[in-house]
Image (cartoon, rainbow, N blue to C red; front, side, top):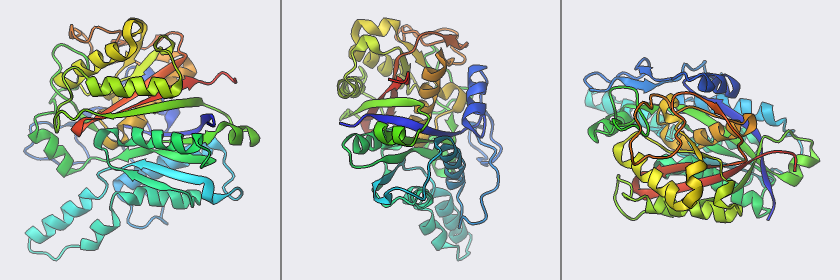
Length: 399
């Protein structure tokens, strides 16, 4: 198996249009949550989300959806950080793996509204915004002729994308791959979570005794994964190492997690096994932590099960308290947060954690960032249908 490292990161969020701006705001305990500005949802009881103030799309991009614009901004930062020479090398050994967003829904919504209003509408627009368009466009920018994959696993999509990219490189099939996810708010998704009564009208409070639901968010995180040999041969700056991943299925319920986090625990245990990590080597968990009553309790139980006694000394961080739930992008966002935490040896805060739920009896890093030794991390993403993914990362120390 080849060792796999991260050599590029692009991160666009409601806190900033690049990784360092976002990271600085994260450590200061700022939040991107606020009243809806770009998405109009009149009549909905929840009028709160984490929206991104995006620049205009490049003129050469045809029919740029909001989601594609997010992806392209983060791609540009990723490529700049990686310093890749795309004019040389074998394009057949380049891959693109993306978590499928709701990118085509706004175009479909516009078409449906046109038809309901008696107008003909632009059906072709919806075709141009199918979920695979993000991966296709990014692959074209990379000149990639290797596999391109669009993964539709709801909120674990982009973490599964990262895991599959790691696997392809570790097996020697690719030199490098772009992996991540992007998500933009849309009416259908927003109304759907509202109908499920899964959203909180106030800023969300992961792990809190009074947590009442999530807030939705948008953003994009793209990471360049590369074989260590390829990265060293071109003198790349290495940001961290991907050690392995695990995936599982609850087989329990369409929307609710297993109450004891059984599937989530299996995913974490498998990530540790593929990474060849002992539980006491894990110092950080970038938690899924949606702030729904069921999810946070199940995740904490799963962490206890997967890590055993070592869980008591692990630090958790809940990035959705700052960025909202970015759905298909959530796993990649959590990975970006964990990667920078390992780099700087600091755990980002879980905001608004005043009174922890007794079930969530782990170190959840309440309200203020904290410095500590961080050697390796698990990143969790759990989705509707019981789709669980956990990714293992290691701090890069030049080994």
